[in-house]
Image (cartoon, rainbow, N blue to C red; front, side):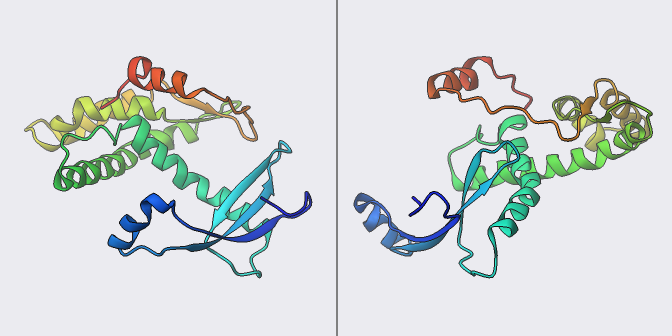
Length: 203
């Protein structure tokens, strides 16, 4: 990919497979795309290849490394939608049902963020060796079991929120700064088996 072992950036033109060219034209998509491949070194010494449409030479490799770190929160949010909320388990196959499911999941994730804020404030004040944070698997499960009482019942909202907050505080996770977990390479078969048979579905 790179002309030399020391190269950190390269601009290339990528084109679709010839079997997809007609479809790309029908969709009004470009027949080619100029992108920049950037190689950054992680703290572990492992290289990471990033692909971007930002071709400006004024943006250095170190800048991309910083941007990559800043984007990580967005990537973990996508993981929340796809893993915790099983976004791709759509209730229908029409574009309308897919949009409906997507916006419902975004609403629920936003609602969860608002509801756990009070519990997180309590955890932030605790004097612990490691900072604690609300367990997202727990919080989404609590939301799943109480959202109807919260939005569509005559029960006092304050009491429902208080009950949910106590559940949010039940099983916090320890947040260890600078903790590094080695990446596990999982075969496609094992990954498929996990997704189909062993993964716990929250929603």
